[in-house]
Length: 362
Image (tube, rainbow, N blue to C red; front, side, top):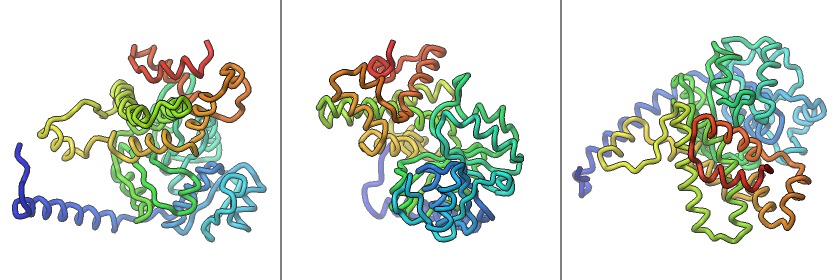
């Protein structure tokens, strides 16, 4: 396949692209906004997600368990415990009263992975129905048995529209309204587009995909790769090694994703295949919710998992370090579940196996 070689030849392509973008943007612009939005989970990311939603929606309420933090958000517009003195939007509401959450059109879930099942079951006892749209911002796997959150929700909430959000989103930067991006995935593309319209802006850009599997897999595995990145940094392996890790990580994400039903592909494409791939929506591995989130988590020591890996790497007594480390490390917990899946499906994922030898005692 030959590429156009001058501006005259490329002009028809440019015009087609501009026209497609214009039609898409006009369609999105006229989609309805959500009448109200709830965010369940009052930690750093949940609060930041509520702050983000409040940029475009006038009726956003953060649901949390801590009454004192709820009062602080209501009166001072801060969540000092999790976000320091960052000011939250003036119209953001907060409450501990779960009895009213069923009245919200969109409910965003931002809880740790270990609390996911209990959180969904709790919301069911407070009356959420098939009319509530759920956006899942939790990253990891459901447990007992190990499976994707989307599979668990087929059992817990079989009739609800489910959407997943993932991207390079450090909580404090989101709360400060600094530039960021995210991928939004759902089997219902109309709902995904509506959420993109409600959350997206010049500051917060979004892309939409129907591949809910790859987005979930990437969100769970990225924390494990971040541990490896931190260890490599501590061992002074160099920037080449850390960049190579990103490439290898994408391949392992694709391996598990394809096994679980995702569309991700890590193989090289020839020119015709590349254009066919882009016409079908592109390769999700290249989107914000996969490679973007992966790079941020691996390269920033603001990531708990990379920080854990680094501190493990410089520690003299590895066994004592693991025994005494008290902070929650999502990647370490996720790794145990990934090992179950690797065994179940007979998968070869070298980085997963390597990190396991370091941080999971035999």
